[in-house]
Image (cartoon, rainbow over all chains, first blue to last red; front, top):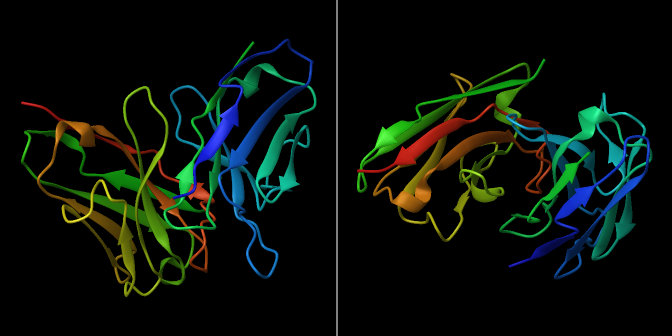
Length: 111
Length: 120
């Protein structure tokens, strides 16, 4: 099974400052045709998860452009260029390439 | 607008059964793979099960294999999860998640979740 490892698990940030979360997979998430099913999810307090980024670097509709995703193979990063108060919550990376799909442990972003 | 609305959660004794439902709207339900993901209280996300767009392929996490059954009714645009032989460790919020048009995990829309509590 593919293990997803996030760091850090806790991320204290200052409003207006950048933030970065790392995610590593135990094996490559790249399919033979180049597609890579690495998503980033945001879970605000008391809410269900919401997808922010799909296939490594594509922002979902309505997601502010301060969020960006990058990486390849087994190493991926979510960046927030300037943290806002509404960004508080837990962020998960997840892979949808290999069965069984799997999630990172979650990174708690706090102001 | 895509909507996924789960129901059927509640308190059940160990060894008991529950059936969760997920009512889907705003998209062509019969074209999409669908999934169940759970989240134990205060913990992270755990994958449970998936079903193909036509219902012919179902797969389960090892932790629920043989106890849970995923199914769908495309006429009613509804996804189900039949949970039998429930254990305390099955206590979690259960989310219905829309997959993609392929076998791979897109996970673009999530329901609000339904809480299952297994306790005597």
